[in-house]
Length: 159
Image (cartoon, rainbow, N blue to C red; front, top):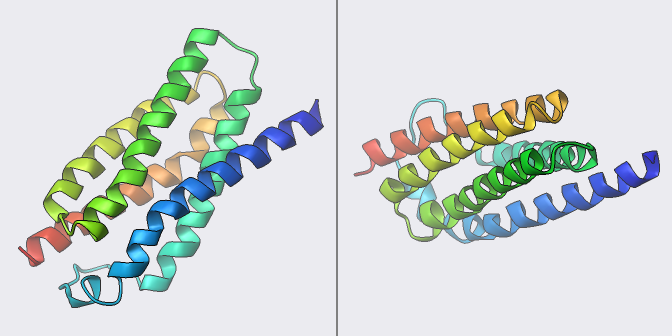
């Protein structure tokens, strides 16, 4: 049983890391020219901070998903939790190409708003299934809220 969980955890962590980092490839091509030319809001971290932070958050998200997968629980509740996890992951992956690829900071604000809402629902539906899984998503929510502040700042300072 324990081995089965760690297999699930490995699958979830690797899948989320790959998905999240795939969208980050767009960043690589914009960071040296377009992004470097932008006026930065106060509190913008150095570029080198984003990769490690996202790697840790994606690992925590994958581990949380594996914990929910492992729980023997109400099928409908698990399906809702999976749906919200998928929705938030969709907005997570969408934000990077919108902001860095399309250079649409305004549209990225809409995406990040939906991302925050969907993370909130994911936490809400994870909580009754596995409290630790829900708590593992709280730093992710906080980081995305911080990213939303940065997104607003970039948009405001560079309109």
